[in-house]
Image (cartoon, rainbow, N blue to C red; front, side, top):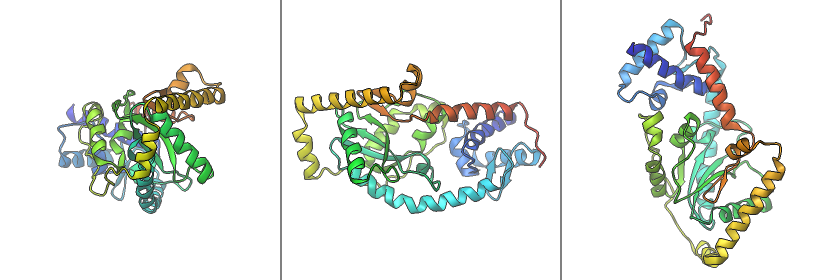
Length: 306
């Protein structure tokens, strides 16, 4: 009975990453499996039994929930591409950290998982000063539009929270995976504060996950241009500007995405004084729906000739 439970937990992990056609090593599965008392040798034995019984497939050192050798080829290509993008992400993260009211910068999305598609972007997750999130976001967007000609390739800012609201309100496998894999690039201390505030990730989903190494993370550095702008935009002027930026942005989104239902808008474009999420393609919902379909199929039997 215990062995069957462990096999189901392995399938949960592999089916989630099947959505991305992303095979995993045994070490990676260990980090994502919902089994707090599992030892690595026990996991290796379970994986071997599952491969031998045809429940999962192994290609080289990688495991997956569907028989397709191309996944491994694609993963290795994405890993190689990610290695080229990571230095740029650290450089850009340090630069973003010098914008007014930005307190911490982390890489999210595919690059945080050490993969990068040919058409991929560098996604950033930011923590800002309280009551200045929308002002900080607007300054970043203006920089991107004016100086980067609105290019998202190295400067995709799609999720911001403030430092008084570090706990992620939506708690599911998608958000847990994104939190667990965030790669800090600026202000390691606030990264640890964020992880402490989101202990639900390990308690409810990934008890074996390890925090990212912060050895090479840029420390918080507030140079004089940042200090000057924060001083000018402090007090009532900053409060007024932040509220104006939020009101203009959200009204624009409501017009642009007027076909969204209220619930869809709130999930894809969550807009509060302390949080801004811009996922208009409904990526989270699509991933969770596909995952649910795949895990249901896997747990209730998927017979494929090996």
